[in-house]
Length: 266
Image (tube, rainbow, N blue to C red; front, top):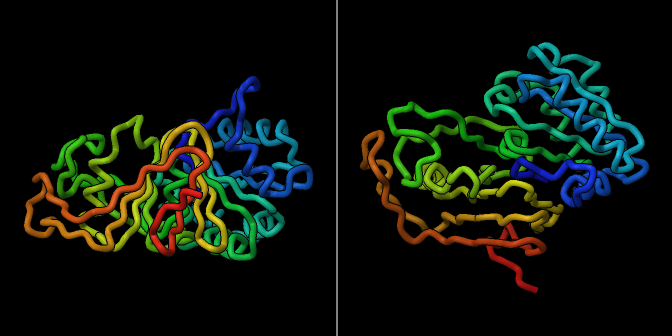
């Protein structure tokens, strides 16, 4: 369940996105583990979500505190994750999640728990890390990653947690004008399915690969199966050309078949 960041947490708000996560985790029986590793203020970030999820009816909420890679390889971390019915990865910096958790026993446990049916949600950086590929900072020679134009070298790809295969997820999508950087990655790796999530917007993906949109914004999906580009003919920083791409824009409540790569209007 990737979330585009900025999800409603206010007491007077609808909290549709976070409520769905708690419901999928078991509702009043939910045992949630919050992973605030991406944040520079993990204690504060983790406690914020503890209060939100308890307020939404979860039975228990615990924080998995990972400050070093050895923490992510500890028996205590693995045991905490094994007892969870829902795992929530907060926002922050993708690079922290990669550096501290990628390839660790905690990451492997999250993958196994998800394969067993446990819902794994991530917001902002936590949304991107659930995929097999994650965008990281580029060379800087291609300009800012919020540029509207797709340029070679805007961002780089690194390995994520691998819960979603052949997919890349970006967040704060419309709010931060990230189509350019998504297209630059898509041009270099046309076989990937690229998903851009607006703020306060999430997708729930079931075992059959059916994606459902939640929240107040839109989801942008780019299918590169038949696309061609001049990515490998260009120098770093040059604007790219992409042809035969297939763009989908989905509003709340709409669904998409990730395996067939087609929208579902019914």
